[in-house]
Image 1: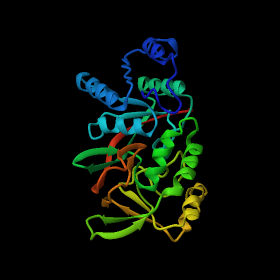
Image 2: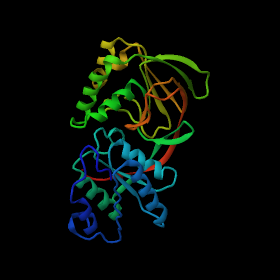
Image 3: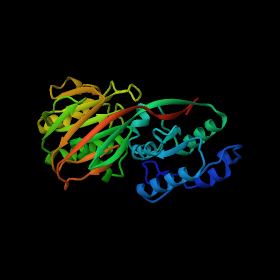
Image 4: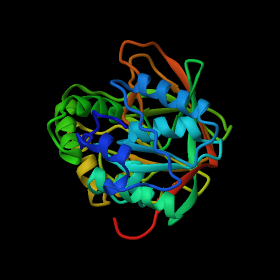
Length: 309
C-alpha cells in the first residue's frame, strides 16, 4: 500500500486486515500487509515478501498508477495475479481496465473476499517494457515524454487538488514556459524520422491526467501500444489540447497523430522530462538519451473482482 496515494490509507486498515475483513476471520487466506515511507523502500519490502513467501495467490496493491506500476514490475511474467484497489489521484490504468474506484477500505474488502471465495475473474493484459539509461523498466498505463511529463511533474506538486483538476491547474502553469523539441522516432524497426513535437506519449491504457482520454481506441489487452504525438502548437493551441481531449475533439487537430505499434525507439534530446505512470524517470538536468519501448502481450494476470463495487 502507498500511504501517500491520493485517497490515503484508512488509519484502521492494518488492524482490520490483521483481524479479518469486516472484523471476521478469513479462512484459508493469509494476508501480509506491506507498507513503507517511500516507493523504493516499498518495492524492496514487497519483493522480499514475494521471494520468501513460498508462493502467493495474488499481489494486491492499493494506490495510484505509480503503485500499480510497481506491482506490475514485481509480478509481470511470473504468473502471480495482480489485484488493484484504485486509491490514487489519476488511477488511469485501473480506469482503462474497467476497475471501478470506490472507498479504499471497501475495495480491499471486496478484493480479498473475492480471492477467498473464488469470485474473481483473471484477465491477461499487456505490459509496457522499456530500457532507459541501461535500466529495464515496466509501466502499465503510459510513458510520457515532453510537455505531458512537465505537466505531470507540476501536478505532483499540487497535492491539494483532486485528479483532473490538479492536471488542468498544472497545464495552465506549465504552458507559459514550454517550447517544442526535435525527437527521433523509429516505429517497429522502421527508419528513424525527425519529429518536432510538444509531446510524445506511448500508451497501453487510453487516458492520462485522471481520465483525459487522449487515446480513445487504446485497449489494455490488444497486444499493441498507441503512440500519441502532438506536433507544434501555439500556446493557445497547447492550452486547449487537453480540454478538447476531455470531450474527444482533439483527434480532429492537424497537429495530433496516432500510430499503433509493438515497439518504438525515441531519441530524446537533452533537458526533456521522461515520466512513466506518474513517476519521474529522467529530470530536466539530464542529457540526451535513447528510449526503447515495447509491448509484452498478455504478460500480466489481472484480478477482476465480480459484482458491485
